[in-house]
Length: 498
Image (cartoon, rainbow, N blue to C red; front, side, top):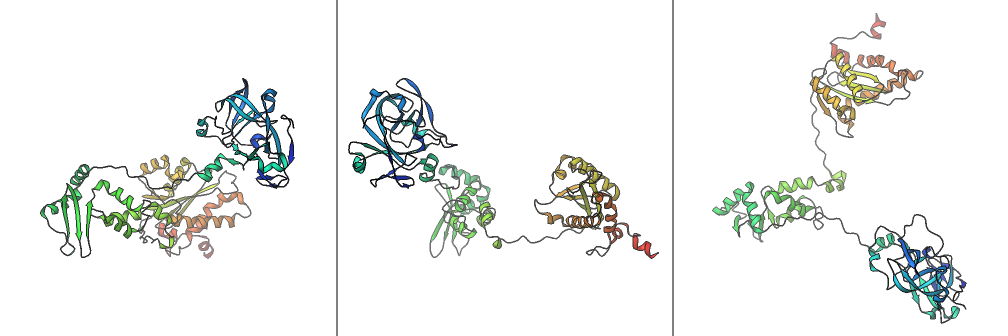
């Protein structure tokens, strides 16, 4: 067989990602780096180089253990007498000639042995041959499809191709990102290390400067025990203050921690990877084996309760609820009011209104509502001032945290009118349940009254507000009209009676 002749053998059944030869030998297929196609989105480390002083495109394939050259770039006098067998991606095994070429690239320089292929993806593919420059292994930011190519003993294919042939065997395709995912062990997320490195002299100085430890220093000097039964005493040894507690079982010697270092000790005793975010008692017991300070139990309790990870992972059924507090009773009308916005409402009215600004008095449950075209801060502030001119300026106004109520315009209006602004907790509408319940009632009344003429809903607002103000409230047993004006308002029933 001529050296420049490429023979093609059928590989038989495909066993992904390998091919089986007629002799029964299994040869992994070569990757797309040496074939015509190119996978979309694949970034490869490609640079310029020279082969026989001719400029070529060079691909650095970090998973290949040989060099591949385009056949048209190799003179016939550079071909050798041996050949190489390669398993291709199309399921065939092809015989390719081998040549000695002169290259000058960032990866390879000098004379190297290369496999000649008719249509590789690039002119020159540089694998991990001994001549390759080691710096290419540190290149980052590139993802290449690679094939690990190794020379195999020819006796495996002796029955089908002859004993004088060299066979190139390739393994499965492994991308660089996959290799990192499979082989690289990700470090565990642990607590940030405590960087304070204090010598005994600095630590002793901090103890002396801490006013909370002053009483302990006095006890250590006077040798007065804290508790005669538990035999707790204090002593200064090597300029450091120690708390020594003795019982029938053992003696515990605890270092007194100054104020500025207590958070670090609690963080190490609770948040560290070997602490495991345990409860108050175990965290306290862990710390007090070596350290102590005045009020340590209360500090550890507050630290554990304020731990963000513990709060997010504790079962909800075991979290105690905060006791309900008493809401202040508002006795004077329009001392405190709650405001809210409804909308956008569809359809838009003929006047262009699509929002409703509502206000309810806490003392009398007297409601006010105004249709608005927009809910910009200036529009809302002007509408509120108009409501105040009809019922009086309140002392406090409760609203949610909408941008209209938190704006600088609203703050300036509140400052000029001496109104105190109160805001609800985010995503907690129950705080202003009075106005929220009125909004639901008002929307239901509008929906029923505007069935035939939905675009006139803003014209129904005054009449529906009158209907709400006229009837007694279940919680107060009086109507808002009576509580605000001190008299019964003449309504449709009174007119009918007369």
